[in-house]
Image (cartoon, rainbow, N blue to C red):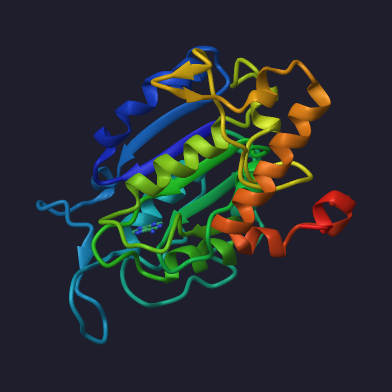
Length: 275
Ligand code: ADE
């Protein structure tokens, strides 16, 4: 998988060289490249933002600079007209299918364009799983009050797969942290990323039973007077499984009742339903 990230703080992503993501890069499973959006500016101040049309506080990221950058990363020909103003390129100036085809066949394979945005649908484990199948992800980090709404719309109009996601109901200063979160959630699902793939199958939000995970313990079994649950040292695997499942169900109903509402009831047995 190839991951391009566009940001005004590309240094932020130097951490991608560390930990398991760094190892995955060394193994050739994924390449992560952060680009500085300001490299696509032409003015002396390298400005990437402007005041909001219609008034209001803050600054909005300009579509022209984003489009120059994204066209380059996607291997698309520039649309032509937008740099000079509002005029539309005519169909004869721009083939409707060519840019998409170029992007599909071009550098890095099937691209998905992802913009973090606090006003977008929540990013879920299922999104991470779906995006882990893509060949090429391009993340665009917004700053200030966000980016011009026409940027994602334009690339959707070009036939590209464009996603906008929020990572939670809070507002960050920019998309960089959100991209780090999404990138890690996606990359760790790549085959070969995790030393032990079983650890992915059992964790929260995944699989046929998307519950919060049961609590884990390690040795010593008595630590500062606190015992681990006796059943876990009983050696009875069926009882351990039952204990963990009950705990996952109890914790999920208490902490995240919304997940229980979405649970497929055929996953439950008489013992669960009696509770
Ligand atoms: N940018 C600012 N806040 C964000 C959030 N919660 N999710 C995604 N992108 C953001």
